[in-house]
View 1 (cartoon, each protein chain N blue to C red):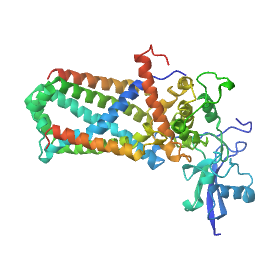
View 2 (cartoon, chains in turn green, purple, blue):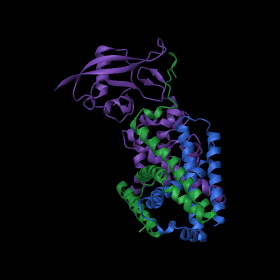
View 3 (cartoon, each protein chain N blue to C red):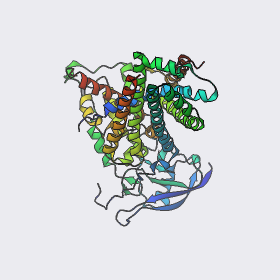
View 4 (spheres, one colour):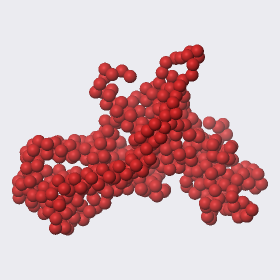
Length: 132
Length: 247
Length: 113
């Protein structure tokens, strides 16, 4: 360090740093999806509990979940869940590059494969659950 | 050749006289095809010789002229004036202490670079008579991307975790460790893991990805760090579930 | 510098993130559809009870919930740090305890079916 005076340290705002740029904001939205994943897990946990308590408990639970408040909550969860999925799949080539000989598999191929898998898995879940 | 007058708002700080940095405005006659570095050079040569900043190659290979331009970490020699409108705000690279004007104290980065042992550590000592280390093109390709780092520290300025947690070893240093870990001639991975697989190493990273977005050489440090996380996790399970396996 | 033990929670975070990325949207749709007039057969009490009665059903439901909870817990820990909360030790204990509680509860409910 220099002998000519003390360097100046600029403060980084601990609570508001992510307002400094759109890329930081997008990152925080991605991170906050975990709150809604947790909410969904909680709903599933309650579902299991009600299921174990008998027919009336389960049916009343399902009735509440599909009421107006339940639908709004689930739509919000769905939006964040989809953002989690897309942001997750979009970075897979960075975390898991696939080298074949001297070339790397194009990122778009890896991402595309994940989206295809997402589509297949979703259809499978809905089909096996007798949604159609 | 056409000209334009560019308003530069530059953060000044003289450690001998100032208690705080302050902005200074310069109206600089520029050529349209200039970069911010050209404008700064004009200021220093013609208008205000006291302005201090680092630069060298003027072609984005030395990594000296990293600074914040309109809040974005950029190489001043790669920030074209034609991409900017209005007043251009020039500040020293974020997350580093200001030495003077646009010159930052980079000791922290240099120390971390040394910690990760960014040099080949051969698997076994080989005498010169044994010949050269042989490496196929495919083996080279595996780590080549991570050799492109010019140590410009833009990634450290972009990384919010480094800004919040200064002891984080950071994107470039860990990517360079990864470069050597992936080199088929190297046998020093376990030594480097002691540093980069620590809490101050790769585990401080939360994959914001800003580092890769600002990297002028397309090194993709974010990718390197995720790969280090995955390998370190596999390592951890191997070490704890199969301790008889000595690497 | 000692090697961290974070891999254990990060591994769960990554596995959970992958599972939720592939499955959560479809699962939410399953419980949204009844509100729009489509009742998936699985949601009928008898059918779901039968599915959860199978050991494979219990395993699937438990595995899913376990990974979802631990993914959310670890990410929440990091997110709270990003929001400026500095008591990482306390936060870690709180979120992982919650995930563990949820995991145990899931196991308990499933065993009662």
